[in-house]
Image (tube, rainbow, N blue to C red; front, side):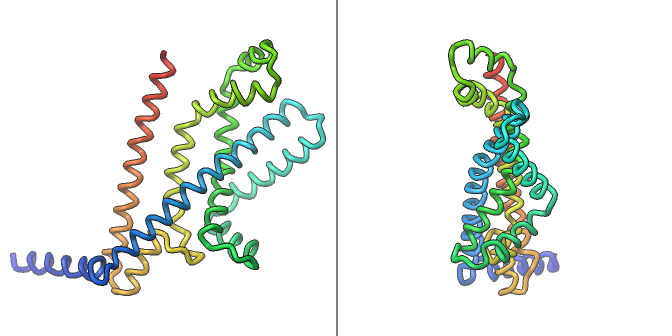
Length: 240
């Protein structure tokens, strides 16, 4: 009983040192804000870039005679190969120390761009599969109504495709949230870096890192619950 009380008192003391004393919990709060901001902006960049990449590859597959489509498709293919074939942390380091090293762009913006480029490579394949899952008769129906191929794609095909891939894109948001834990490599105070700062000040490792893991776990579980509800709602709308 005495040992248990001593252990509890020790845990309380270390909790106070790590989070309460000198408001050190703010390192986690600020880090969480940066983590969510990077993730949100990177997903937006990824969806836009991935959608454009998917459209280029699909357009080239439908019409291989246009030389400019051939060049764009080659660029997109190289982009997908490089991004999907190299680790995220290496891409972040190259973006920060090699590509944007001579500019005055803040590290937070560099991280948004790097994670956005990484996300776009995976979103591209998701969107491409979503477009291909739409029945070909939809394009023919749009053209029979007098719509151009571009208008049919924007107004008829893409809305159905995004509805089909919405859960996969939302899951990409969840994956990207966890991947941002490497942002500290370029001096960004994300959630993980916030825990490491507390460790360096207090010399207590398990308390801040367990707290960081708990915050990530709560976020992922919450987002996963939202994803499941989204999937159920989309499934019900398909049955109507």
